[in-house]
Image (cartoon, rainbow, N blue to C red; front, side, top):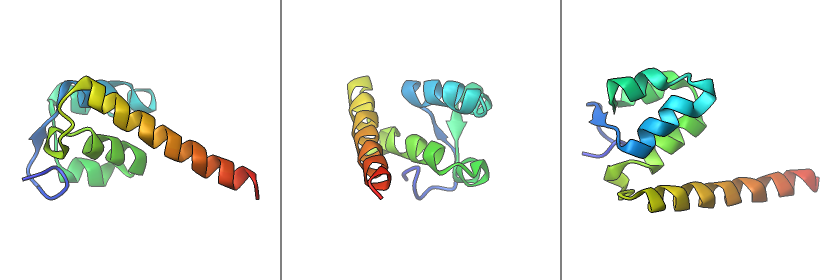
Length: 90
């Protein structure tokens, strides 16, 4: 089961925990302390960027090293920067 299809909670890896602790000024720190996250947690967050980060950085999505987590965040940042540039050009 993967985080994207499972309704059961899955354990957070170290980088997911750090994101949960710091994201939104600590709004999701309780998930880091709990050490797991499930689909209801993601659904209830109402924050699609947080949801994206938790899914994209999951072990079940083959994000199994800190370097890979950083690469994925850098890739997302580049895509967001490109979207901002497009909007600014309007």
